Length: 269
Image 1 (cartoon, one colour):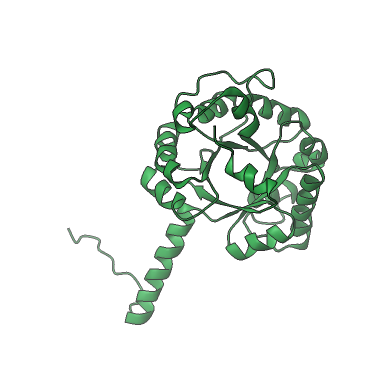
Image 2 (cartoon, rainbow, N blue to C red):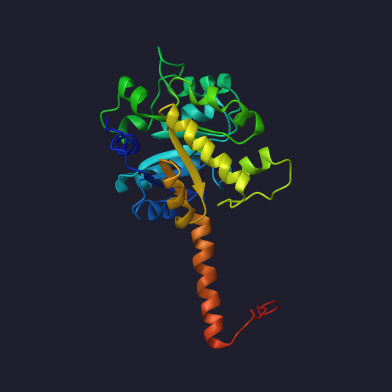
């Protein structure tokens, strides 16, 4: 079984760039994976997709050589194990609030005696050549999301969980979960209190020898986060890239032609 590409980068003390797929389509996933990301994550939690889309997306992205991961909907063993059986090399799990929840999450990713994962790697056995239990236990990544006040309060205990490989920070939910509604959710936080918290999470992760990972909305902010100690940053995703590129093209055309608004086609057919 091949070495996990993210593990290899981190062992070489090099940061990683992650792509994000929320559109349930193998063609858009293949296009994303072909752009040179070190890893690509399929978002089952909030993405417009389910397992029937996930598996062909993994198949389409395999040729890229990127490390393929998924964010599961919840700390649910059926979702986690089935996603691993589809060939995921890393799992991002939302809403981890305590050491006990982190331990439970990790146990679903590891075969006995390290965990309670059941054996049935339907596609993984073929999609990850040389697949075997010891390598699966050592190579697959477990990334917990810290998104609530409880999660932040228990950060040290969570970060010290055996078998946990990193913490993935989603700034939108982290803001909602810690700021009592004072701040709107969103990426690339500029508020001093949020920057301080995001930096604190990286510091705790690094102290415990696990990877700090951050979801970002721009390459500039992602590069800034690397300087704070983050070892993986996500820069945008398929739906945001599509909207941004289309919006820019439309705005450009309207500016250059003087057409400042769309013409309604209602009743044209």
